[in-house]
Structure formats: structure tokens, C-alpha cells
Image (cartoon, rainbow, N blue to C red):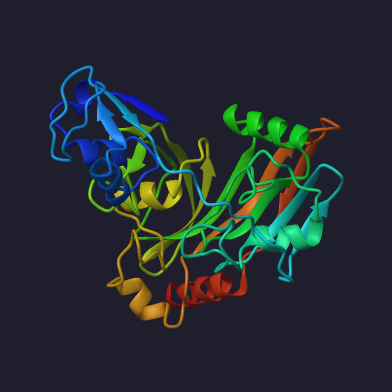
Amino acid sequence: MIHLTVTDSGVGVRLDAFIAENSELSRAMAQKLIDNGSVTVNGKAEDKKYKLCPGDKISIDPPEPKPCVAMPEDIPLDVIYEDDDVIVINKPKGIVVHPAAGNETGTLVNALIAHCGDSLSGIGGVMRPGIVHRIDKDTSGLLVVAKNDAAHIFLSDEMKDHSVSRIYYAIARGYIDEPLTVDLPIGRHPVDRKKMAVTYKNSKNAITHIEPIERLDGATYIKCRLETGRTHQIRVHLSHIGHPIIGDEIYGGTKNPVMQKFGKGLVGQCLHAAELTFVHPRTKEPMHFTSPLPDYFSRILELMRGQNG
């Protein structure tokens, strides 16, 4: 059972829209549950178009999820480090971290189950065993996976305390000449539920530190340090300030003059998780890992350097 209470920001919002904005349910699923009588407002069934009032209490009784377990698959893994508690993977672009709708197989989790067997934390559930943090499908680079529950809890606490250091390298459209910090909240896009956006409604704080490394032809090679870890954070922040990542078709658009000039054949954005630092959950020693830029990223970078003289 899911319980929601309407605050000032939700007053006047349609019931189906409010549920979609304040839960993991899509608007279509919310409408289906409302039509099926699985949603009540103050103990009474209401229409999906019902406009919410202050203090309304919404109860949602979603159907039991169908049993589903990620299965092992023989997919090559680039293992950077492994012991009894953690495994650090260098993920290539194009692979999803864990199974979800539309990507039930061929994920990093499927490969990890084949590699680790039962030696993965169960806290993330049967579809996300060991997964402490994620990187996007078309982002490459480092992530740490927990091999037992104690390690998972310890690493998750490190993430919450912002004591895990995650450094990304990217090529951003336009010129960024000075270091800057983007401190803007991120939540679901108000229209496109598959996207995230800078918004002050139903959002979480998000902070990205950006440092220019090199000016290129029509773009800037940059380093980004995450202080928080929201979904699509770097991509959303850079797009919001007018410097979308090269190759990011979701937040940067396809009519990018830099891409048209240099990025023919590029699939996936130029964003790479290059450095990862955390305290080991058992030894309490600092662990630091690096990953070189993937070939496609390096090729684009060299092309843009050449044009820039």
C-alpha cells in the first residue's frame, strides 16, 4: 500500500498527475489503478480528473509484482578490482546496469550474476543485486558493486554522506571558461516522464562541480565532480545551463552543429566516469580507481583538438 498526503504544491493538481509525480508509478498506471478502484482519496474513490485539496490523503493499492529474477548471462566484464566485499567494474557504453522494462536481459547485473554467482548483496532485490549506484546506458566508466549486505550498507551510507568521490570527464557544447558549481534541484520532467529536469516541484537537491580542462572547436573538455547522485544529474545540469553534452540526444538534441561536424557515427554521449574513490567497507582503507577514456571519446576529442589548432 502506498500512502500520499497532499501539500500546498499539490493543491489543484489532477489525481493521476499527482500520483505520477510523487511515486514510481507512471501516469498511465495511475489512471489504470484509479479506474480499477485501487485508489482512494480520504477513503473514497475519486475520478482521475479529481482536483486535489490541501491535506487530502491518497491510498494506492498496487497489484503484487510478478515474480521476476535476473538470470546469469555470459557477458564479458572489465573487472578493475575484486575481493570478498566489492567488485569494481569498468562499464562500456551501450549496456544497461540492471534489468527493467524494455531491458530485461543483456545488462550488467546479468553479467555480474554469471561472474559472482550468489556472492552479491541482496539488498537491491532480485533485479538489482549488489547495485549501490548506477551510470546511464550510454555513459561509460567505473562503478562499485557490493558482494554482501554489510558492504552494501556501508557503501550506501558513504553515498549518502557524499564521501564517495566520483569524477566524470565530458565534452560540453559551447565554451566554459571558469570553474562553476551548479546547485539546482532535479526531479521528473513535468511532461516527459522518461526524462529528468531542473525543477523545484517534487525534486531533490543536486550539486555538480564543473571545471574546464581545454577549449575545443565549438566545445569544452571538462571535468565534473558529483556532490550528489541524482538520475541523469550531469546531463541535466549541463543542458540546463546551455552546455549539453556532445552526443546526448535526449538532453542535447540531434541538431547539434558540433556533432554534425565531428560526431558522425558516434553513438552515446561523451561522458565517462573516470575516477572513483571510496573507503573499503571492511578494511576502512581509501580505495582509488581510474579508467582511461574509451576509444570513441578519445577520437572525438582528438578531432576537435585538431580543428582548434
